[in-house]
Image (cartoon, rainbow, N blue to C red; front, side, top):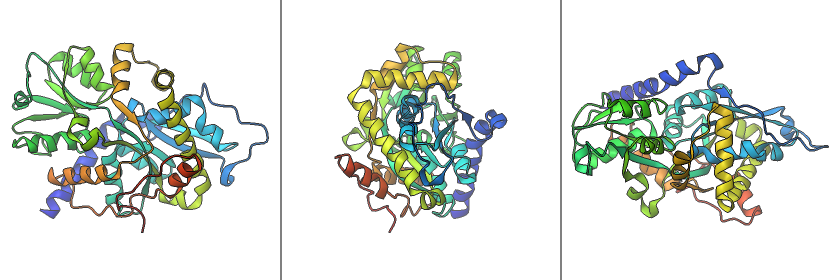
Length: 369
């Protein structure tokens, strides 16, 4: 059983990584963000920790709104002073983990499953989660002509972004809770789980090759714009309707060598989150503007507005829910029983939060001892 699960996880990571890496082959691990609206470095600013730059990674998803807005509004650059904030955009967690491991990025915004997989695969040596960023923003959207109730999902073709990614694990766990059987690796069983890149999912839905999808925003709202119906919001499955969808990670090597730079990025993140929550409409427009700068295409209002409403921006990493998500991956057969002790180091975040007069956050017993 142990060897089977290990092979399954390795294969899941390989499959999950292959498509994004092919798409990004021409630009290493991720694409560079355009540098149109960055804050100018203030006169007399100094480099932090003697660094020329800090390399920050994130996805072109609204669930990574903190990074989008902090980039677009110049919060990162403001806190880093004369140290340049550089950005890479990723389509998938495994490629971002590879970039972190190789030193192509130093700090990244990423989902819980890639963070768990990266930590456990390296036996706890490559990364730490240093903060939270977002909760929610994941939905099961279906073709209402084919699926009218949750029980109708049985026998249908439902897309998830990748084998073993955060939404894939959540959907497999939900399937198991219904008493249905699906082979995690092949996706075959009482439900056909079709691993489909988020960029392709709306077209797959329009063509009828899938009957629905368990996906993050803005893909979920794109499907609704195509006539899909939200059958289930994943938030409804969690206590207090909160679960981690985006964390902040850093390489352990960078954290040890450059704590002042890490603290500066966390300060920018906390400032950004405060501004987002105080100015939701402006923040929504700012995130969309950065999405357009990064991808060349902004989201239309009928996608942007409902997607934005379903995401909660938070400094709290919601550590207890990360542990639950790891348990779901184990139950699905995608992960061996992991030891997550040490995956969190919230020391610098709590320092920043205290200085800002904000409430500190908890690591659910999974912090560095």
